[in-house]
Amino acid sequence: MPGYVRIAPEQLRTGQKALLLFIHDGGLCAGVLKHGPDGDLQRLVPENPAPSDLILGICAMMADMPADADLFVVLESQAYWPESFPLLRGA
Image: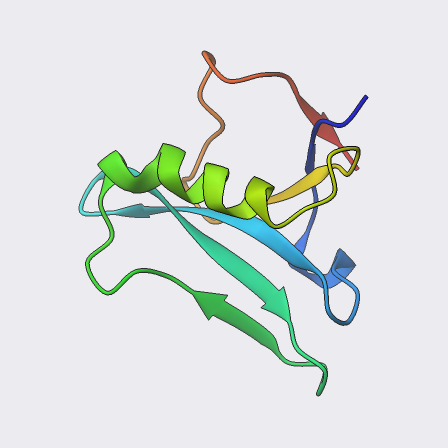
């Protein structure tokens, strides 16, 4: 069963993406962390991040994934996985 798996940024392999959770102006926000073909980690976040975009960000990531794949999650400093969300497994 697919799920949500917390990983460290360096665990992303080339071409992989992870949901990136971070704090902006005191609120939990979402973006994407992508391991580019050149080996660079790309932090892709909205121009004006807002907590109201969190669920949309998760849905957008899941829409681009196979139905049986795990969604990788990277938590930046002070970011957290809400208790009301499904279980977040460790890698």
